[in-house]
Image 1 (cartoon, helix red, strand yellow):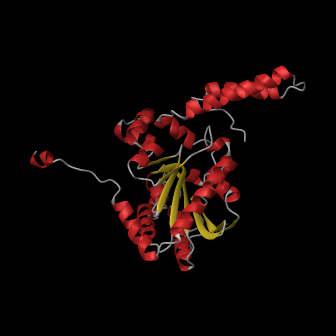
Image 2 (spheres, rainbow, N blue to C red):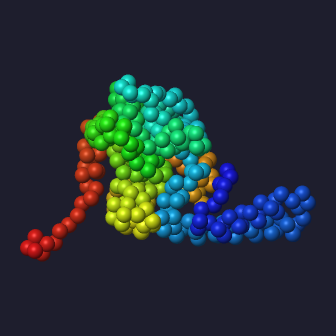
Image 3 (cartoon, rainbow, N blue to C red):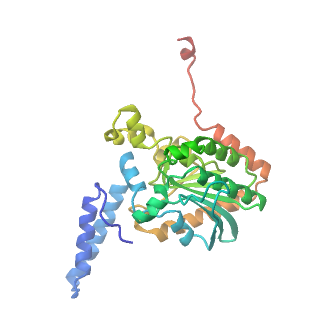
Length: 325
């Protein structure tokens, strides 16, 4: 698909793509032109491999936020066979930032929850730019209970800079409802798979992030706070967001090394935004394989292993000298 204006570190990539498109638009395609196109395509592949093989944390954030990156609805359309959306939290309203519904993938009937950002500005505004309100998490908990009642595995797609920070959201119990959602997920007697597909920011991500398997896409990030939020607290300015990104250790390689995630899903060359279909195919393969493995476990084992998994995150060692000081 068209990627629109490139990111600031993609100048050479954009130039190569522009030259290729210009040659392909020519009506008379001589052997020399075809040869040049092939040469430029090979050069483009090498440039993409070099660039995306050495992204720094701030560049990873930019890729995770790319406007053409596949969202929850894209995966539902491309990787799943069926989807029936469910609405409302039975208390306040329907939060469009939190998508939920019944779905089918291969032979598995599942319940899907996921953040949704929207493509156009109108859609993004309606979805609060992927920042769910308390009613979004209450809706999610209702669907969790429904999935447990009918013994349907739960799949969660995480893609949010954080829960909605407005006064109204706080008045309706934002922090409390996220805590309740995490507690509910920790005790679900069904398989739970969570995948960070773009941004995984703060409690907004954790609200649907407690699973038997937690995966992250190669160029996504998963963090206790956004880089801008961290910079604002520590350095009193969002200008230090790149520095904060370096310190937060939230890239897929960091998360895997620290044991925060179980799996890293490789993205197509140049990022998931360059090939939705290929990324959706990899997502489908991963979900089907993981569901097949989890369905063999008893409900008691799922709950016990999930508890142990999250208890081990953040383990640290203190030297005897530290106690004496």
